[in-house]
Image 1 (cartoon, rainbow, N blue to C red):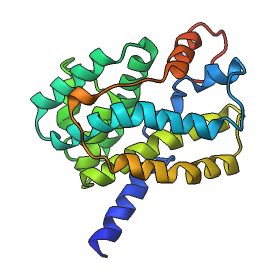
Image 2: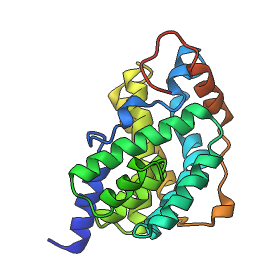
Image 3: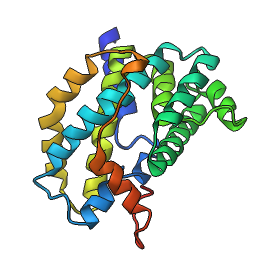
Length: 226
């Protein structure tokens, strides 16, 4: 098997929506938007594209890349994790990031992924929060993916998670999800190719989903955690 084929198969395995990473519990504001009638089936591809451009690319991408580079440096990872915690101003997003990150980390500990046990020890000792983009950087480096491929997998994981949530909410069907992923695939590739970036460049501007997550906490019936 060629190295390129091995990398492809690894990326497919860990980017698969069926991978038990815990992401199924989170809609990142999508549930409240659907409940409030603020998002239609036709709006969904543009919504995902906006989340990629203004949340993943400007926040997660940078953090994942830095965590990937520092995967064997626990002290540096702790600094990055604290930075993410300080920059996530929406409580439900911050809590969701930690819960999703810890779920993903726990799976990789059981899979004996390089670096997962050491970082989980810091989480268990309350030295680390365990935010999702930090964990992604660590474990995707641990399974042998280079930085560019790790970023592509991270972008896909976000888009695929939103599609899965939308299907569960009855907003779209499975074919709609595949059409959305095909439509935004060039965007994912473009954004992932931007590489690491500096920590001072971190930003996020997704007020619609941020407000939706705040409203979600007050809804009587909820399928997702945020």
